[in-house]
Length: 239
Ligand code: SF4
Image 1 (tube, rainbow, N blue to C red):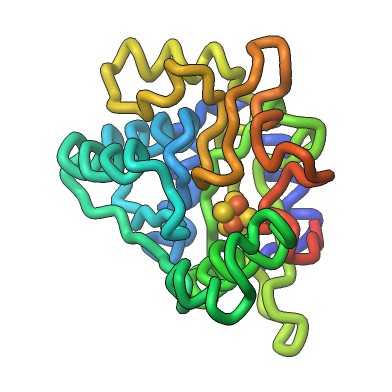
Image 2 (image 1 turned 135 degrees about the horizontal axis):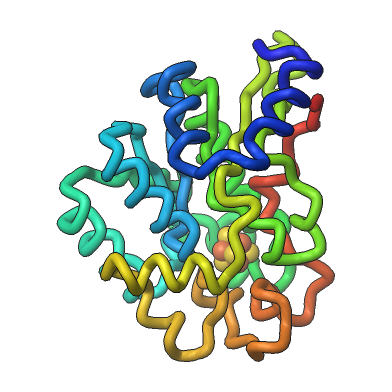
């Protein structure tokens, strides 16, 4: 799809380009074969706004695990109304109750990796099968595991066919402060839990408040050696 050299060159170029230009490049290259994936953290909201203002009509999707906060579900509806487009919810095959019948109750307490695979990774894989470019709101400042992400990366999606997927992280260089300044300035709806000490909001059982001196994802999966759900780690990076 794009050679390693092309990815390197684009990464250099994008370091100094505004986020709108990076999104415009993706639109020109992939059109609606590129989509924004968001869990409605701050950076995803900024990206949706920038795309909307510049009339880049990327599809937008989210992973609805069935275990989201009511505030997050309500935010999705508020954002659809604010931006005037639909946000696709990707759901797992099994309801929470069905998962409990097969795996036992509260799988997240015993095997959060398996729970995240069933409720997040597999639904995402289904979506990526129909995309060439996945646009994320990842930022380098969020955590150690994200500190060295590229603005553009190439991943092997399907080892059998050799099919690749481009992952675009146009918000990689943004700080948390810059994100929240933008959201407030543009009066974009955001998750009210952010004002209650939840610095990163995911599923109810695996999200806790975190101190302002901790990394942003410190409140996720407390008690486990886990800081990523797996959606950003299941594919092999090529460049
Ligand atoms: S974040 Fe927790 S509840 Fe949500 S899918 Fe992962 S393990 Fe399950």
